[in-house]
Length: 330
Image 1: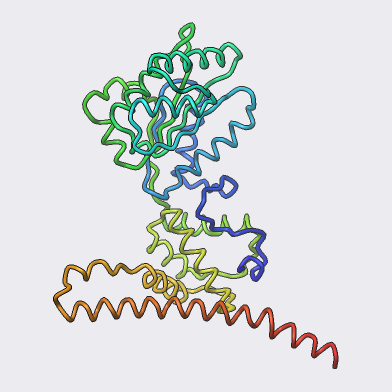
Image 2: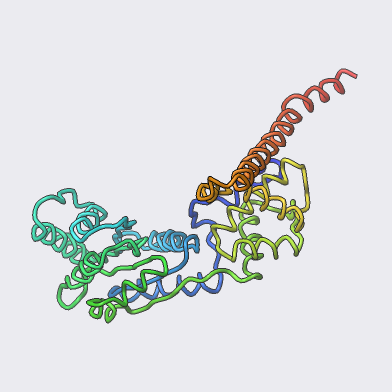
């Protein structure tokens, strides 16, 4: 929709991770360096943590692009954990490497995994396990990962693992019984938010990759407010900037300033305002009135957005073609 209006080749602020748009902030560059360092060693654990939306998954996908350049040398399994216990973890790891028979006893599954990893090593391939959302793993599942790192052939490790998770995963690693795993972590890095200058560079970087030629333009105040509101978290920046571009399209604007960003932030806040809190004060008429007022404002803002969209669609689909035909007749 707004991509055509601003002559962009693609949506620059998609929420789904896309390695094509990978931005090397200082933090992301350092985290990627650790991942590549781990690849070069071929053993142990690399741990990367960061807040929700900090860009950990994009890091992994960018890493996979690097792996593709070494086709045939590395086989990988990418596991997104969701409260897996030890047995389910082993099955997921095996399935990720393409092992079809994951049933039977734990001993049988471990035997199949070791056999597969030995086969890879004999063919000159390295096995890489990437575990995303590692904070959801139970301590027993994390311990199982450590046990998998014991597989060796002629003193060569058969498997190395990258563990990516939210900050609380570090608490898991500091827990009792994790000493042996901590001793096998060869690098660890926490991926922080972008600073104000990086936020501006990040926005411009994604816009340029989508074909942006400074239309629309952003004022310094707009960049500053976007950073303050999103706290430099890439996913939040994407969400807000996508809405800013949509608003600009609906209003047919070519410059985005601080006031425009404020309006969009207000629209988003109104649309997602929680009405659950007033339930605790149900007996108080004033609270009910305030809740109803919030609902009405939310509906009003949604209606405004729909009306803006309908106005533009009518103008582009009906009015402008009719005016063009009239000019051609005259």
